[in-house]
Image 1 (cartoon, one colour):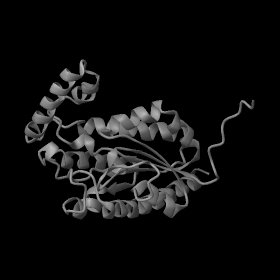
Image 2 (cartoon, rainbow, N blue to C red):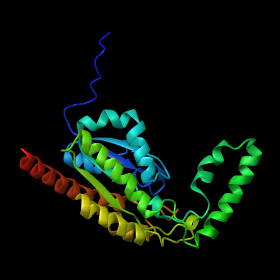
Image 3 (tube, helix red, strand yellow):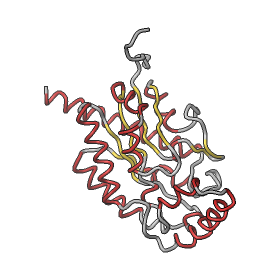
Image 4 (cartoon, rainbow, N blue to C red):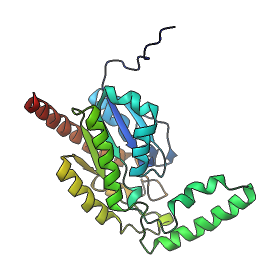
Length: 255
């Protein structure tokens, strides 16, 4: 057998998206990565690209870093990427009065009856304590540190590769007490990072606000309806084009 690398390309660039569940949830719940109406696929279709969506519910900027450094799908996509989108950070800014590690470890509790009791207690406490607004799942300083680690690692191997970031979305989710006081500090930190490192940003809140506060969004109050996916896609396409032009100018200057 040939020991060479498997050819995963069809000649089209890859849109590599590191994201949370906002990238693949619609108005009725989670969807497969190839669903035609989620925003990563809308963007790729408009650009004539392919998509590699690496995402999971609850992911923060820290999880994006772990995916970049540990997931072989990401490693295989980077050489063929036309752009990378960091569509994380919204979860970072949500109130997390109980430790994130506690939530993530609930699934491992045994026996099952004890797991159900602990999970019920967590679900009762989370929305009530969330009204305090703090602490958040990941402080802005750490969010930016993880995003910059991602950007810097990609720049080391693909200095020509455009990178796009996102500002947190908005929500009206009862599970978080309908509180999002951590958003503005997160935006300020991301703005400073974007300015310093010249990273184009997409403001998810501006794109989805009308939809999320309507009856067309997901009833959970945090995931979007189809109009929001379309608005995010339009904003993302514009950001990708800006990033590609900027990368092309930088390459010419270096050359």
